[in-house]
Image (cartoon, rainbow, N blue to C red):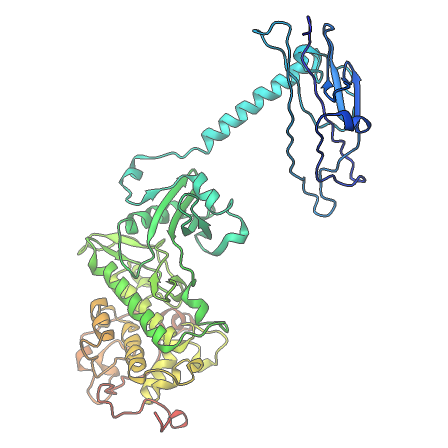
Length: 526
């Protein structure tokens, strides 16, 4: 045993120089065979048994031992730093065993020379002049860590205790989405981005909606969404699993829908074409979910942004309503107080531009647009279409008047669809798209029509019919009391109201004897 033994000071230096090739592994049992690769100085030496001794029993002695060859720590291709690990066995024999020793340090240094370094408490790395700097840096580092920890902590306000679903920690969602990296991005909209994630504890796949800090109404929509759907349960609604709020970051966690949104299967040359059975099932599912929002819960929930992009498809291609960021919740039987017009062009009911007050009827209007685009495979407003086909509802109405309604069915179905079901959906789409809110059916009526529980009315009013005078042959008497002042003379009005100058149609689809195709599209074999 040494009478006096300063702390062992053990330094392996991987000198940073990109011209040297990188070593994958440096492994040695003892240092006997590493003499030629080790550079030792001061009190350090390699003994005969292969043990590297950094100091002896001399007082205030330091010892350095460096690996001689330089190692590359950055990729010459990507410029990213390599990760590494080190492991070794060591022993410290202090002068007074119960007091311990100062210790030793492992370091990475660009040079083997450490001028001015001192032993003992300076560990052969520092000296009296720079220890103060290290101390200041250490204090600043601790302070920065504490401030950042407090700043990033989840702050729970009183109202948050009343929100029903599970509250996730921010770190849990950050880990689930791998730091919200772009590779996990599923999509984005006006209120932020949606990421795919996997919850670490359960390996459950989820969709995490991160509301944008730039969204002026972000917090408002966020709290509305939580309040609206936190306790809603329906097979045709995208289930909210939980949420998180951390300073400006607002996050919602949903069930992951592996087949994405419906619009990807309808527009812009989709890779997969939905058959008629799948489309009709999606329509009925969305109708059922919307009926639940309007009538099936303790309060009425108005979605306000029904469109193909907000209909998500699960693993079995069932339609589920999602994105309740614009949902408006109010007590059944009372009037909503909002005056902001929100939604998507082509789905906005015309009365919203005048009143700014969403209702269940304005949801029905948007659902009518959805019905038509699912059958036709086209957007409500199609800028690339011919002038007469620019506004989808106008085009469908013209075909309805001319007795050729099936001409509007998506040609990608190759005539493989149920004609009666298609006519029901198209007729119902026209009824829901009426400019007059009180003429549109309720969602309960819509569901009953789709399920075949009741027959649709024989007469369909023109979408822009304001009074009974637009009827031919006296079929419009039921509309005599309608009063509507919304203009329809400009192109802008045409875009926002889907107006057209057509008359009522009087085709009875239930009779089964009328052809709904133009002569050029009739198929005698059907």
